[in-house]
Amino acid sequence: ILNVEQSPQSLHVQEGDSTNFTCSFPSSNFYALHWYRWETAKSPEALFVMTLNGDEKKKGRISATLNTKEGYSYLYIKGSQPEDSATYLCAFRGYSTLTFGKGTMLLVSP
Amino acid sequence: EAGVAQSPRYKIIEKRQSVAFWCNPISGHATLYWYQQILGQGPKLLIQFQNNGVVDDSQLPKDRFSAERLKGVDSTLKIQPAKLEDSAVYLCASRSGRTASSTGELFFGEGSRLTVL
Image (tube, helix red, strand yellow):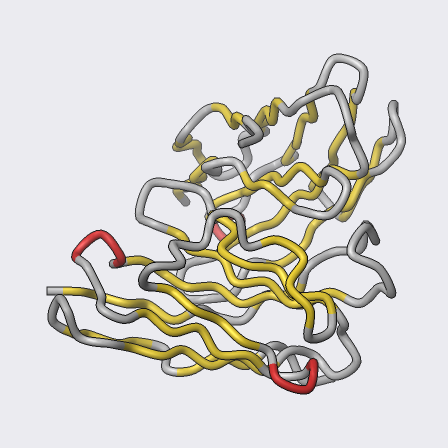
């Protein structure tokens, strides 16, 4: 069973703060690294799918970086808003299966 | 484009009873997944289908769980008999891509929340 670790487990910030999370994954048999946002009572939604070492992706105030050689990815949120409150999941794709971490629960207070 | 549909959204049963969940993936998506998400943990893959064939069911408790994907479209996941530890959200997801190794994003349903008393 693959080990995908996310930190911190939870985070509480004020509106306007910038924040970042970490995802650690195996550095072998790498095909892709996914980031998903899961809001309460909704379905998880894909943020990024990253496949190349050194890849950086951005969607609005959210960005992510990827280091496949050392096995980690960072997710950054600039100027957090209350609507960013959600659980952020990363998932490691080996040859065919996708293994998720436990997620980072973010709460942004107004 | 219609999303992934799941039902029921919520189910409460007593232990040793049976339950079934249904999933209709996005039209044309060849790959379908069932994940189990227990509170405080990440989603755990139960079974992955490519069309109507099983790609991975290594973590499916086969003594009580079963799943099928007839005609390579919708799918059902059954638990019989249920145990207390089966209380979880059961997520169905689908993905386009012609092979099991395609790296595209997953599209999830809203999940079926099971409580076993």
